[in-house]
Amino acid sequence: MRRLEDFARVKLAFLPTPLEELQRLGESLDIRLWIKRDDYTGFGGGGNKARKMEFHMVEALDAKATVLITTGGHQSNHARMVAAVARRFGMESVLVLKGPIPDHWQGNLLLDQLLGARFEFIPHEEYFQKIDERMKAQAEEARNRGLVPHIVPLGGATPLGSLGYVNAVLEMSHQFQEMDLAPPEYIVTAVGSGGTQSGLEVGVRRYWPNTRVIGISVSRDKAFFEDRISRFATEAGELLEWPYRIRKEELWIEDGYVGPGYGMPSEGSVAAIRLLADMESVFLDPVYTGKAMDGLLDLVHKGAIRRGKRVLFLHTGGQPSLFAFADALASKA
Image (cartoon, rainbow, N blue to C red; front, side, top):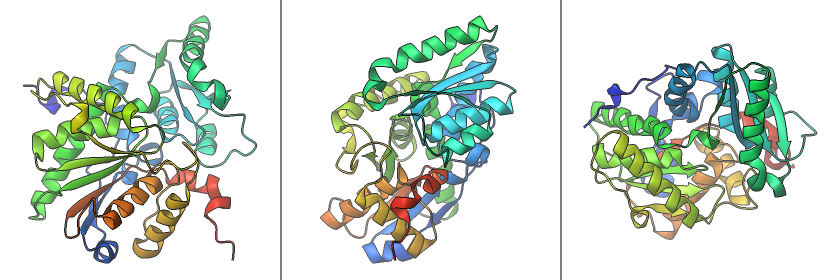
């Protein structure tokens, strides 16, 4: 078996990130509730993508890349992270984003601009048909300018990128041991491209075999993510030479909290954002963590997560996008 330490990484994230108990909210739900603060990974505005890019950047640097190309929505945390990593290493970045040319450059889009990214926008209705060809076209254009392109997949979601969250489970295992606490019975995370949950699935099988991962989809249906995450997780296990074959029927994925669609606030996510700010002074975002917390709250209320259980909520970051949704979040009073 290979160890995580056997894989080369480019240090980006400020690790370990804090792990703290949300005592007031937990008591109101009659559960023990902790939050893993991966919004505090620090680099490039923080968030879960820093852990994945530590592995992806090894490939880019080995290839002597001079421009990074990736994709996402208008408020993509991943796109912002790729732009930040590119500037750190003196590279250019090209972001091929889903949606029209924006009227207002706010939230992550503003940070992308500050980081010197170049943009291409694909209309919503054409995105899934055109995205692969447009990223390849951007790579070809870069070659014609004498640059060396490197395409980073959507969300950094690959078996290699998933190792970032295998490592996160090991990190959390040490933190719970230091607090003399048993591992949580559930980890709740947002699922946007699948790489975070796939890493968590491998990590819990290795370090916390009695812990279930609950993925709250923020974009696609359950069947899509079952196929994608089971494949990524199994291939991540193969990279590590660990004997894990994750079947899709073993996964717990909820797809009832997407709301109007990816990148659009839902009634539940707005309520969850306000609740966490009010009770714990924690800021969530409307695209990912607000919907994930909405799912957690509802699963407790429905009894799918029973009272008295130990639950860990993974905060994957995204606060910069809050400012792009002021109209939806601000009090109308």
